[in-house]
Image: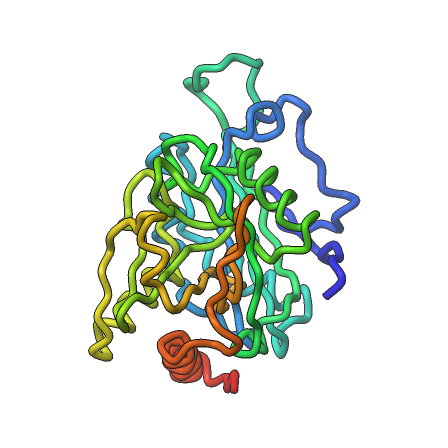
Length: 292
């Protein structure tokens, strides 16, 4: 799908055309990347896991001591979808909160007015059940607070750009011999019909789709272990998949290392397929939208 700009954006209390939206050159989000963001999916205009996404937004804001009242965000989100005329379309909401304008210093200003940006955009959320992707593997060079959904994403940007240049769907990262996650997705392995994923903590983002999938496993008698998988255990792995707000659940066909390629079959594995089906059923249950 071709990337386009939204028709309307919300900025600090106003709905504007993108070309009319302006922030100060002294906004700390611009100068430092001092801000938090969130992305929330919707299917045919119906929001999915809204509370969970807003709770994560609150968590990140609290972790960086960024004060912002998000009490009216749900109403703004619904208006963003309406103004973008996406009530019958699939898409996502982008929210960004920065610490606002202040003279440039590294430490937080005592007084500030947060800058709030929000908009809805169309994106393809169908067909993930048929995707079987190749990914590249590299060292995880990000900071140690990956649990905060910060707009400061330079290491992620470099990793994802490296993947795109090589024709790969994602860049899967390794820290100290253990897999963490992708540049913009959560990571899962299947070994002996048991699902493995890195535990929550400061080395990964607490993915909303990731957490939802973990609960799906528990509710459907699929054994899941939140434990970092060492690279040395790959010989026992039979399936790999990634999850994310717009990635949903995407199967991985090949892991490309600098010196080798590991293949995980010519068709999507049975556990991955089962989880994709369970996920689609939950989307239908919560939004009324059939993804099959």
